Amino acid sequence: MSSTTLEANQLVIAGEVVQIAELRYTPAGIPLLSFTLQHISEKTEAGMQRRVECAVPVIAMGSIAEQHKHLKEGTKARVAGFLAKRSMKSTQLVLHITTLEII
Image 1 (cartoon, rainbow, N blue to C red):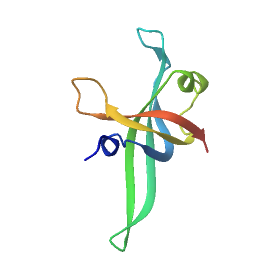
Image 2: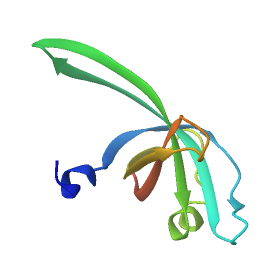
Image 3: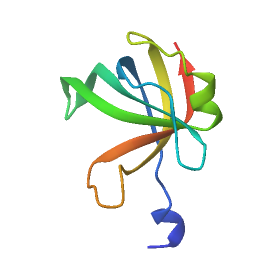
Image 4: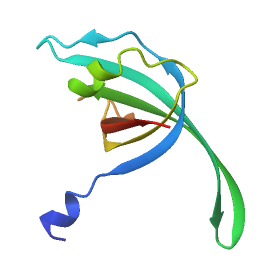
């Protein structure tokens, strides 16, 4: 495998904000906004319709967090970003967003 293949890490998902934390700041002073995005859709898999439901933990940092600090539960949004561990010792994944579009 080439290093380019290993660098692929991108996720785009749309859903509804179901939980949101207050805007906070990292020790370095960077704004951080965390919320959960609930996705529900119908997808075709192996020729059959399947209902898909998932709750994705999301983190917005910097200008995205600042621009959307008044985000409310119930808001529908499309986000794009990359997956990373919640912390160095955690195995839980969280979506770090690079774009957020209210839909």
